[in-house]
Amino acid sequence: MIPQAKPSATQGKTIADGKTVLCAEADALRTMADALDTRFADAVLTILETKGRLVVAGIGKSGHVGRKIAATFASTGTPSYFVHAAEASHGDMGMIVGDDACLLLSKSGETTELSDLISYTRRFGIQLISITGNADSTLAQKSDVALILPDVPEVCAIGLAPTTSTTLSLALGDALAVAVMKQRGFEPESFHLFHPGGKLGAQFQRVGELMYKGDGLPLVTEDEPMSSVLMRMTGTGYGVAIVARDRILSGIITDGDLRRNMDGLMARRAGDVATRNPKTIAPDALVSEAVRIMDGNKITALCVVDEAQRVQGMIRLHDCLRAGVI
Image 1 (tube, rainbow, N blue to C red):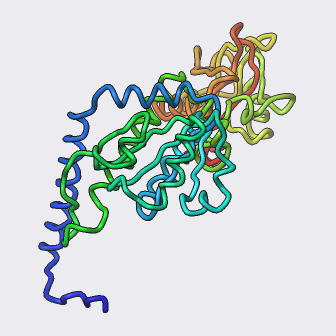
Image 2 (image 1 turned 180 degrees about the vertical axis):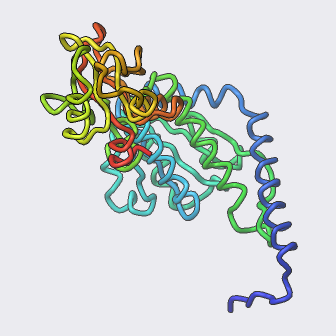
């Protein structure tokens, strides 16, 4: 029977318990970081030299951690997938080929369900990396590279449930994935290939994909009367006018420019009112960079220009918001 919670627990005691767990796991992570040695570099090199995929496996909590590690590798440029160790013994072993490498997780290093996988890698010369808490275990001894977790206690109340050990395994998997992606020269553009959806994907869109362009742009000439400029600004619905000569950018007119030039506004020309040298961005820049520029300069629109300062389009903060970038 599962014991019922005691109603006498105070809020302060609960917060203190939470802090104790977090501090203990943070200390364990520092211990592991201090003990990191050449075996970590060997594991990274093994993954980099793998021509096939990185196959991750584990059972129980180690399996849950393994799924996340495999997903992290896959999203950062290393083809990787998770195989359930028990299912591997019943046919899924055929998914693993000679060009692959295996990463097996087991705190004890004696997990029965992993034995067939260990034997399979040894039989067919498949590189085996392990994350385990027991350097003398079968898993560690049979591995090409064994990454040993520090000998620290689990932080659960009875010291048995996988807690600290799973945190260490997860962090070590992250360390491997990040080290590998740095060695590969994995760039933000590469990241976008694997994250086309959601907010992450939106941040890696190019300005050219989102900008307004063509005949609908609010383009005006230097000598255009402000009465015509105002019609252009309101008619397009952009709230700004781009001042250009033969499409070469010379300035921009915003609501702020209108307010600053209210005295005799209708008697002026576009060139008299425009803000010169406005902030611009290239069409191949990331939309997230456009947001950073607009936010940093407290503006709501950017002219998009090429290397010759020819106007290619315009991007607005509102459009970035609608696209899910912010």
